[in-house]
Amino acid sequence: MPEMVIHTEKLSKHFKGVQALTDLSMDVPAHSIVGFLGPNGAGKSTTIKLLLGLIHPSSGRASIFGQDITRHSLEIRQRVGYLAQQPKFDEAMTARQTLRFVAKFFYSGPKQLIEARVEESLKLVGLDDKADRVVRGFSGGEMQRLGIAQAQINEPDLLILDEPAAALDPMGRRDVLNIMERLRERSTIFYSTHILDDVQRVSDRVVILNKGSLVAQGPIESLLQSEEGAIYHVALNGDVETAQARVKALSWVNNLFVRNSNGVTHWQVGVTDTAAAEQLLLRTIMADDDIQVLEYGPETYELEDVFMKVVQ
Amino acid sequence: MTVTQKLQSKKSIGYLSGFGNLFARESRKWWRSRRWWMQSLLWLVILNGIVVFGLFVMPTLVEESGAEMQQAAESGVQTMTAEQFQQDVPNLLFGLATFFLPVGVIILVQGQVYAEKQSGITAWILSKPVVRPAYLLAKFLADWIGIVLVLVILQMATAYLLLTSVIEVNTVGYITAVALLIMLLLFYQSFTLMMSVMGNSTEIVLGASMGLFLGGSLLKNPLAQIFGDAVFATPWMLPDAIALAVTGEPLPPQLQITVVAVPALTVACLLLMIWQFHRQEL
Image (cartoon, rainbow over all chains, first blue to last red; front, side, top):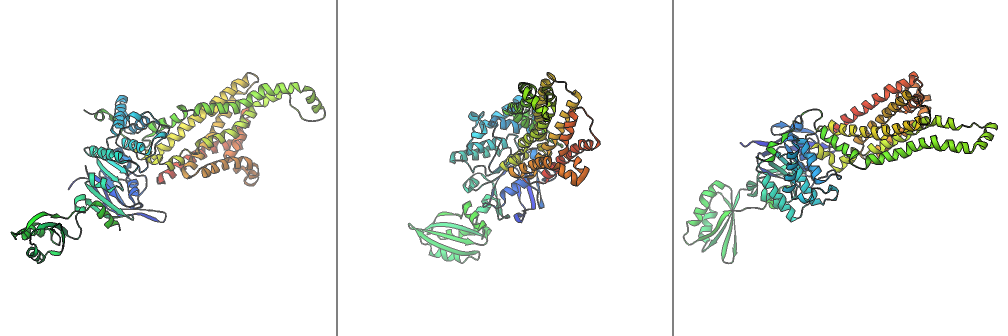
């Protein structure tokens, strides 16, 4: 069993008359990148604020690095980096001063090494040429980059990012994803987002919330598989009638849809027993020498399909 | 070996974790911006302007209108000589200071917490290894130092030099009055900061703080008739104590209650502010 960096048990939060989060039980394993998904108002930011001790749980419990979030919040925050949804900094400070300010919460010295760390962070997010500009004049994208720089300045064991790519153009988004991939070597990354393509690209796992409740969590590959057993896609050439009858007769095949396209026959075979299908389906089809199998494999879904299905 | 491996990590465990860094940030707002010299200039003009006027301009005007003053005195109108005007300047100075400086302090402090809470800066700072009291106390202490040095010490030291160049001043009484003035400002600073923690708009914070100050100042006499000596346990009576102290006269027992009650109220505001901030959700 992998070490869990974040673990919550029936974590709930209600604000005056509004149930923002209900019985959230989730796990985030060490050194993983976990996408935290859900429509607006699903409870993502509430969960993140609970984990950081910015708001207090109504019931349930949660731990980070095995330490309780309410009793050991200070120790936890020593090892966490956080980027808010709309990062705001002291507008009178420059980017360099902002990072220096944050670094001094974590490091006592020596001064030149703190400065070197600040410089390194500015370069990481491509703000080294704007280091001495006051934050007041920064664009949304620059603010986001500064937010990422300050979140990782203490080389945290856990990075919590609330919509890190939200205000960025495609180039900026790509850069952020690259930074996240680089940071995964030393950190666990838990981030909320609406950009499902990004999640599919960099995440190992996803946690999906809807209306304050958990609706799905797990490794991304398993979520992308069909939930009602597996569906296999087979593309065939030749006389398929006999093979079709043989496959339909199998006890664990519950449906078979046929489609012809450009002289190729496509089957979608729904199965109830994946293990049996893996062992016998291809063998059953191939038993007929007149058939050529052009493509074969379990049907895969896009994350967007899964997301839409679970939140609707 | 990377840079971070050599960096010395802070052990941020304790009741004031993050205080030093936050205090430096708050102090920068005073001393590395225009604030210190703008405030210095503003209060020099208001407070020491009146001292210069009372000491040097007013006596000249009185002397120039000597004949008219003589006539007025003869017809029974109460008049003051140039010397009497000059002798009254310390009272005038502290009278103005006890009215305008609390207003200045309230305006300076009012946005300190709620504005940062609304913008998300407070949540950002408290996501770092910072304890909540440290966030508030850093603001309180940095402002207190700025207020005492710029609004009080600089102004009152300048005024003292001006006054002693012309008239005799009871130095002990003057220092006591300055100390009581600091006590008065400290109370309004604490109260306004507390309101800035509890409130969520300029109207609420400014309204409550100004309301307490102006309402109390205007209504203290009617309130004294209703509540008797209980009014002496409020900051509204402190200007009376200051006016008495500057003359060098001892404070009557009722005003001694004020001198004890105001620091106690200040501490109560600070404790209430910290307790309230602990419960707040950001």
